[in-house]
Length: 292
Ligand code: PMP
Image 1 (cartoon, helix red, strand yellow):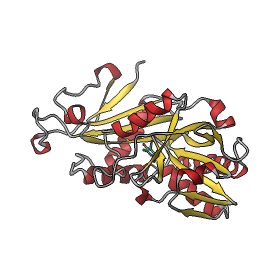
Image 2 (cartoon, protein in one colour):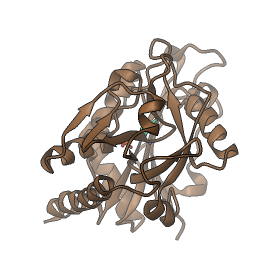
Image 3 (cartoon, helix red, strand yellow):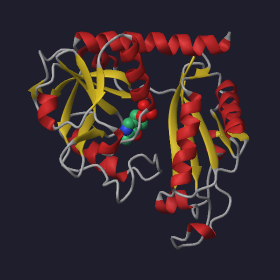
């Protein structure tokens, strides 16, 4: 059976799940989204993802034509309809179709789309051996122009940096902010370990406040690993003992090189490995306890 996509509350075969060419989501990237994972049939941190979706929508003055409870239920139905217990869910809310001009107030019927599918973001060996990163010359969006806290359908800023990474043979790229400080990667947050302390840029460095990032901060605290949100530069990453990235799709993945320079001894570090294991334990316990 073909994949079923939920569009405005109706499950339809993938090929029939379409939106208008007049939808401002397509014409202007005017809309918001979320990406989350399901484990054993339960979405990890569903409420946090719904809260962030509603915050992104509020930031762009888009009213989501459903409640969080209804959308949460629709996510579960879409996973079940596709027989997916370990999968990836993409929630998309577009501005809806309007006229050939920017004015969002002339748009009607925002589209509510739920895609549930499989995902394998990075090959298995990267989790074992670690990733290489390059620093992109494309800086992260200036928060005064478009806040990186909004998970909007306009991802060109990140895509330009991703292209730089791919051209350099790297699947991820480090993005600096307008002050030259470390912000995040194109689709993942960044952490370093320095003398036993876990460090990550603060939200006001101009980043998306990652849900996996927040889960890892809580895990580190529970594991008695000192953790702090601090402004950092590329220098801090290069001289770090360890580095890793977090994201719903990526989960926790080690980084072993930046711009061709080894980080630490060039292998995934012990605190990274400890947090990777703790993260998988957390995911299993949070998702199975909800099923019981
Ligand atoms: N930063 C950016 C730019 C992202 O798009 C994402 C999500 N793919 C993340 C960080 C990680 O966020 P989360 O852990 O909530 O998936």
